[in-house]
Amino acid sequence: MLKTLSRPAVKLVERYLPDPYIFVLLLTLIAAAAAIGVERQTPLAVLRFWGDGFWNLLSFSMQMLLVLVAGFMLASSPPVRRQLARLATRAGTPARAIVLVTLVSLAASWINWGFGLVVGALFAKELARQIRVDYRLLIASAYSGFVVWHGGLAGSIPLVIATEGHFTADQIGVVPTGETIFSLFNLAIVVALFIAVPLVNRAMLPDDADSVYVDPERLDTPAGEERPVITRPAEHLENSKTLAWLVGIPGLLFLLDHFLLRGGGLNLNIVNFLFLFLAIVLHRTPRRLLDSLHEAIKGGAGIVIQFPFYAGIMAIMVQSGLAQTLSEGFVSIANADTLPFWSFISAGVVNLFVPSGGGQWAVQAPVMLPAAQALGADIPRIAMAVAWGDAWTNLLQPFWALPVLAIAGLKAKDIMGFCLIQLVVTGVIIALGLSFIP
Image 1: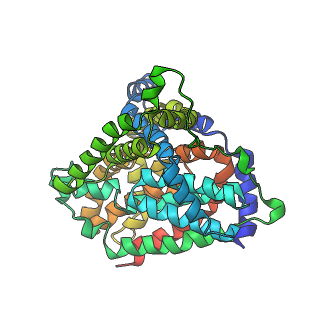
Image 2: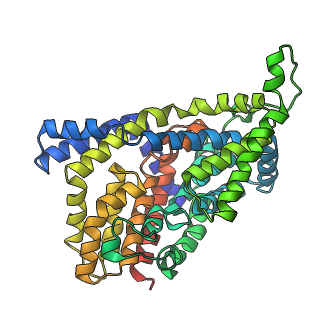
Image 3: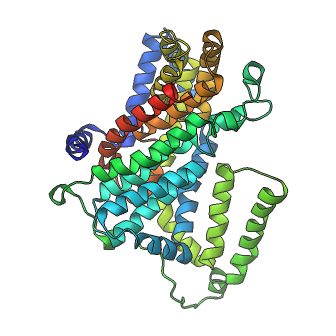
């Protein structure tokens, strides 16, 4: 049945879903029109919201570019390539390949979202080198595991409200992760998704006649390990293992100090630091690292050009009051029992325009928390409902798929038809978990 349903969904998306750049331009116009029509903002005010906020994600854009580049360099190092190839041999069949890449992506994304995006895509490419399987579904499966990130160890909303002095602490105090990430209802949702998402991806595997395959020789082949011919004195430095290790090993020692002696946590900067310095050490010479960097940077164009537009959209949504109006509309029809469900749905809608977990909580917390307190709803559950809504519609919003698509060499329309089916299935699972599991 899912195979039958996925076929028209794939064709629909391939025909009508534009390139992510066109998507963000359309969202910009929709957000601006809604701010003018719904919030009665003047065109000049909306223009100022957009222009003033356009560069607000510059640091985050660089972080995302480094997720792609550093993750690619790490995965293209000879030791990691060998391990990915060895793991890929365990798949054996197209169906097993789909299930295996989904499980790897789910596990990695639950640990850290940036790690999951890169590892899932690179493992999918390694599988495609060894197994003849529909490449679109393979990459969609790698991306679909991302849906669990906000219920995992790096979920920004549960980590924010577990931090002393967070911006809503005067309303709800500090909420420990035992009541959010490690609560029964959240763990039940995660386990259910670990079972359902791979099975749904497996069920969507097209027949041979409908499949799209990729020539393994056309996939990016990282630089080899052959010994370079050195003709210039400067090339001795470029091919010096000693120089690479004199910088790379202290970087890894810093990470040991961060985790073991200072008790530091895992965040995006630490993940990028880990990826980069492991890549420096494992490539063994600066020249091999730079060759890998040259290949990695080709896929970063989408991130560079699109993230500022999303920053502008976020500014319009927040400054005009449009995001608050959307949230209040859903809250107005809720009671204590249904508020988690409507919080989840509203967060999913807002996420299409504000694809940032931390930014979304800043927008929705001032609406959801007073509503939860007035209705007597469970605060940790409401926070996780917003978190899951933020993660859920990423299956439709191509913002977070950009690193995966860049690594895979595909377009959003190639994978979003399969993700649309997952959007429906995972939405039902998450909604039921938030509504009925104690």
